[in-house]
Image (cartoon, rainbow, N blue to C red; front, side, top):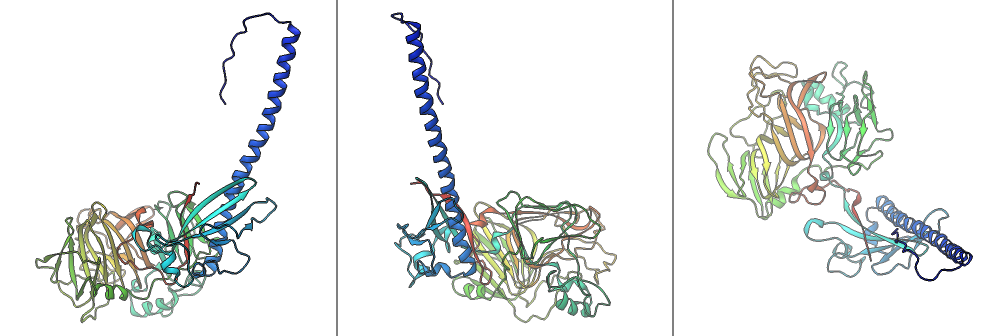
Length: 525
């Protein structure tokens, strides 16, 4: 409110009574006007807020139906009544907000760029954006009404992706191959492929002599610097931090409460992000064979192990023998490189991993600095054997049918409990990986993670991942005693927020993934 300066009175002298009477009259009129104005402003302010909440209720209504039926959007306005759904430009169909507020909302389907309306005969062509960072998304406008006020919000919907999360895991337990002997491994594929809710903790592993599935814990010092999704439940010790702000969703497919405190521990997890239970299960496709087809049509397709060094000038150096120089070539035109199995009979254990110079298996050994857009897929494993970093707007996806592994030689380890007497010699100190990683059937894991280096402290370092990690089982990267790192790496995982809107070329999505709101913006007239 602005205050006006009062000028001093000059001129003719008036009777005090007359002056007083005039002043009182003015004050009465101004006061009455002010009261009426305040009441009007209060009503308008309330209507303004209610109209905004009504618009939000409209979005919630649409999202509810979309999650019950993922094809709801393809029906355009031909959806079951009562409905508030309209074509763009119309708000004829409205629904009242539940309660006695008198507010209501209307929904408009915003067609994709270049189209005029949603068509049930071609919903993909008329609604889904076909290019740019919004590819595969669609929009609706929700307008809320209250009194004389109205507010509109435009929401962009996209299918759930593994790239929506810094950390995606199907099962919060160790990979069956890490249990050592063949009998226990076979039993682990029966018992340890269950979620906690399905009874993973309720019985020992068949054929193990009484051993139970490993319990993987988020300890007190863990910071999950981004969104998270697990098809399982979380197990915590102390108060690890989940998420950076409330915009980072922390989803568990388990029913409430969604997390367990490890035996002997105290404290509760700190959910800085928005914690959601009973979240939809996200399931990867069974293989990455779709990418093999894409690579054979405009990409690069190899058979048998390849070593790849990415170069900052947008090229890559490729070799078939790890001990020989390679050939430098351009990145594939469609952004996809696939390495298929040839004659391959090897099986993997993190305790006996070796690194042959040549192999018929569809493995990729990779390191380097990249500036382009690329997805590399392996029919077998991807092995990161050096820093993998980006420049500029580079984007990299690594998708293995089996494991995404960190190179860490320890030639004398023979079993889960016997590291031998040699020394680890990886030389990968403070390893950095800038990429979106997905291990479809197994884990992101450090080879020989439980063996302590006996020369120097090179292996007692930090593993930094800037991007996203998706895996079926939780892979180990090191071991601790209390809060002290004993072997392998401590974690420093950070979400690449660009992945909310863009992805490496043809990165795989979950099977039958649900739609969710990617972003919301106020729509001003």
